[in-house]
Image (cartoon, rainbow over all chains, first blue to last red; front, side, top):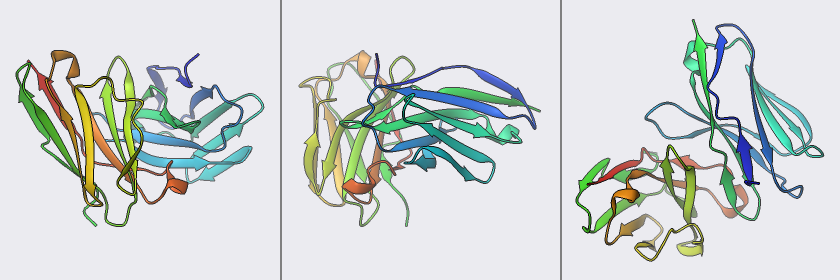
Length: 108
Length: 115
């Protein structure tokens, strides 16, 4: 099993819908989790971090962490075409690991 | 602040040539990372420096790759000799401290093509 796994997609949602992105990780000891967004041809940028079980909300974005099940998810409410990008999950294990990313397309 | 600065933005070279990629981290950041991104393998951590000292180079693919950080404001990633399979986008990123390693700021990347 890879350290961090994501469904590569592509995931397509209509404008205004909720986009749900999921990530699983291999080590129960992990304490810190991050979501990065990468537009096509650009570099990754941090959009959310989460350290505790439960939900963390920031505007239209909600990160959800379930350590017992070893998954972290990102919900994007009221999806906009400008949210179309690849979303990378990242986890601190013995080092810092990125997942391979999920490509999201929001259809106007 | 100008952010993380990488140069060159694009590099085209022939197999067997030496390639040097450069990075200037954000001023005051103590940790610096080099990544390689390809469609097949995603974003891979190559090496990680803290306070100019290499901490983890387990991701460096082979001896053809080397990285240095002679001071807090400059790092290089060198490939010698280069091979076509080294073609990728190479990113440099920096973070404020080891305790903030998950919060990284990326440069614009260097797109390397080895013919």
